[in-house]
Image 1 (tube, rainbow, N blue to C red):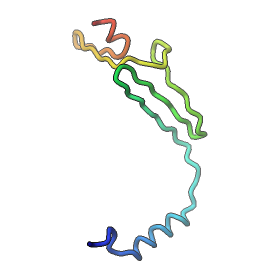
Image 2 (image 1 turned 45 degrees about the horizontal axis):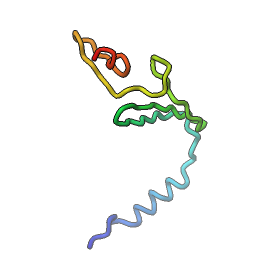
Image 3 (image 1 turned 180 degrees about the vertical axis):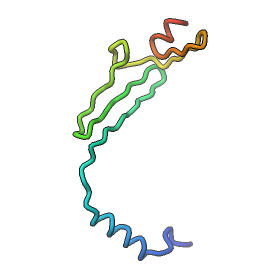
Image 4 (image 1 turned 60 degrees about the horizontal axis):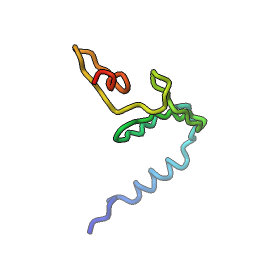
Length: 84
């Protein structure tokens, strides 16, 4: 069985370069989406690690998983359920 990496010296060089790299703190944020069967939630995690649950247009944390297309207009969430 062949080894997963054919040149171990190159692998060691890459690991050494990554270990010696001067890493700087990241100022980016991350968005997480919890998609359930009936509702979904969106969370914004800031670079400080503080999570914020994003509110929808109706100021609710949960948004129904629904979409409606009526007269070439798309509606999502509670607005889509109101059209049904």
